[in-house]
Amino acid sequence: MTQIIILPHEELCPQGALFDAAPGTSICDALLEHGIEIEHACEKSCACTTCHVIVREGFNSLAEATELEEDMLDKAWGLESSSRLSCQAIVADTELVIEIPKYTINMAKEGHSK
Image 1 (cartoon, rainbow, N blue to C red):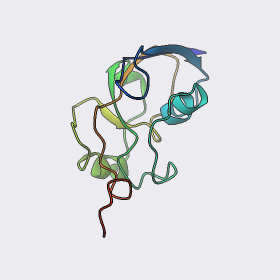
Image 2: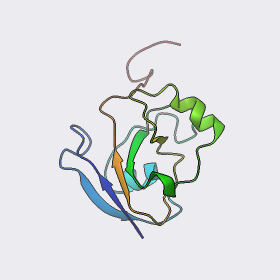
Image 3: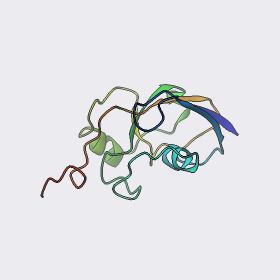
Image 4: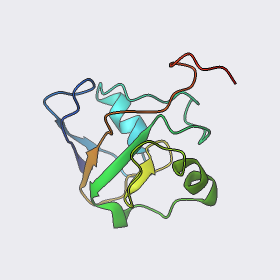
């Protein structure tokens, strides 16, 4: 099992969190399994940016992002060099420290029309 540390997030986990996740699990699934209700508007199909996270430690243990993920990340709020879509980032065997950005861009939730 791989230890995941979630930094405090005002709405989703104000105290932060610490839990173990099985290698091969997406960061998004690990968060959801441990009661951290990160948005995932496209149902984890790499078609939005609502599950964007910043990997503060352990980034290099993750497989490289695909071109599709990179294209989607370009649209994410608060993009950093260690940003990933949590639905696409698969836990390996290195401890991860994850920050969930304060904001997300969710056109459906925010009432925008296409």
